[in-house]
Image 1 (spheres, helix red, strand yellow):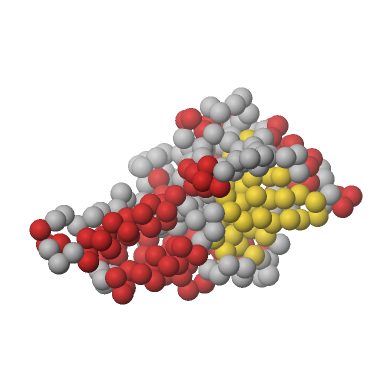
Image 2: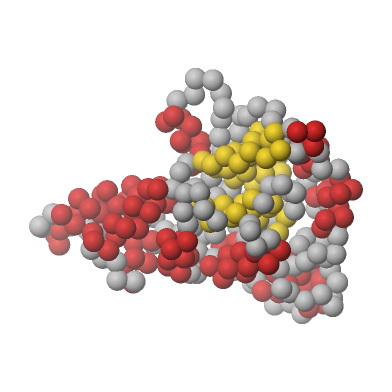
Length: 316
């Protein structure tokens, strides 16, 4: 089966835990990342090295290009011109917006020979991937996996579509048999939560019409009090997968120190405030796939994914 993981942003430990959790459940899993592997998080270099070693075009681990990889590619052109200038010491070294150039320097990548392989890897990442799967009554659904958004409008230019893929935040234009799966806009952002009147859980997977947002803002977990997860979803079953339970995530992150009891109560209150299973967009997606709501509930009940608060349950 196919599993899509949202923006990692250097949260390598979270990614490793989530990947292992998926592979324990499904050893043959195909895992696709929505881009933005780099910037912001604590272990950008470790995530980059793993990606360059393991990600291939059509293998077990795949990835699309995020706007942060694209920004670094634009920086690389400017940096290459600066480096080739014999008088470069007279000019300021070009910098990236989120410190990736410093990550490279700290790890011995300060010459074109060392930097070029990384840029070539970023250049191999496609703007979008398609996964076609057959569901009830032979109905075929196209999962359009992009970083930001997409449009299937007739006559749209590739330039405009590329901009949407990398930077789009206002939803996608697709046909009735397509579901867009993306990251880019953290679900804890106020603007995202206010996009319509359907309930979404901040910091977890969000749903709009034929649209699944996997960016839980994991890289912001140290500066917020609510849960901010690295998120994954199985395309064939719509099962949501997270590295740990909500109460455990709350204990691990944020500015507040919590006891286990406090974290469990806070998680209970969080779930009551955001009844995500009532989201009409998620219900619509389940209906598209022929997955009855009762079947979906049965899949998640008792798991260490979203709604389990059992104090005796241990993390995997």
